[in-house]
Image 1 (tube, rainbow, N blue to C red):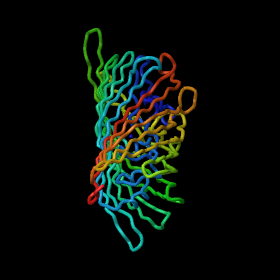
Image 2 (spheres, one colour):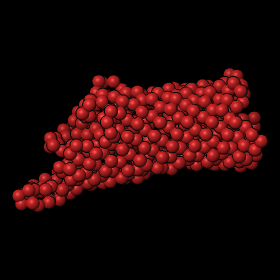
Image 3 (cartoon, rainbow, N blue to C red):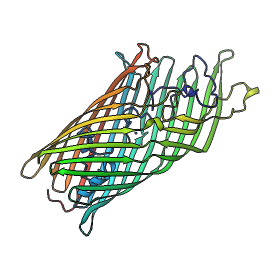
Image 4 (cartoon, rainbow, N blue to C red):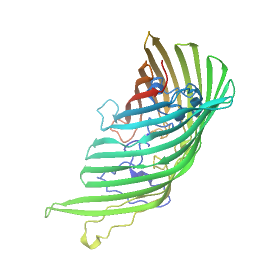
Length: 440
């Protein structure tokens, strides 16, 4: 879980090596990287409970999803817990005031974890092994613009396997850490129709390590303050690209197919550091209010040795596939010549629990601001706004939660006829937790 979605790879012309100029009438494919719009903070974790509260969970994380938010929250666990989370993601983008011309829908496994309580003398806490799909490429996307239609089928994503622990080191202080293994990758199949038909197959494989650190301080029984830091890292990246172009001549009417491809294993990704602070207040046992501020240093995001595969000329006399065009360094994930911005999110949320004799029903809502890393047509970084709602049912050892996240924004975009573009994201999270030995 990317600059404007339809920014062309050719926009990376500020790189140290030149890139071939596309034909004026043929739009280029969008960048190969994931669209991070709306996913700009890598301090965010997973779980329907957290997102139902607007994602303001850094000082309140106290369940099996805690390691993905603030590993210090694992110290609250007193029973073995199992958690699984699934998500549905979709977006619409297009000219402001008009119909969307860029849409995406996808479903993905989002998170799974097993946590077990531990005790070292007077120090208590828990250890956890978890899986999180931080950025998902799974889904179908369609870009329908004047002169071409681009369809993309994606699978996989950037995953994190984490081993962590959270401990209560004193009455008011909790600390946690996770060691994270970034792994896997994704495959995309792209087909374009229009003035020049084209198909591309792309395969990425990522590997790397980083660490999450977390603290929670409870100056009063009803107040928690949280701090989270995620270290930057440079991940190793392998990229394979295969390209097929179809050229049509009118006299005589002949379709010529040309193929080009390349593979490199010397790419690398510089993922940025992230920092988050939060506060949570429980004025009564059934009511929780939370607020977070997170910042991700996307201005430091880079990709090294990225390459594109030019089309092979249809002329039989020049049918030798040209070499890939290699860019020693580009901003990531925009792949454009403008500097990226650091992102920030301000998130607020509330949870109220209705208690009956055998059930607990938590109700949740939240609101957030989300500044993007890419620059709009006026040079500024757009700020999107969002709201969330969620609910759950706690019955015995089982807790079922669901949440809906809606985020939108508009900004100057010279690529749209009206000069402005809109973007709308919709996400649905569903979580199931099992607490062994818990009776309520």
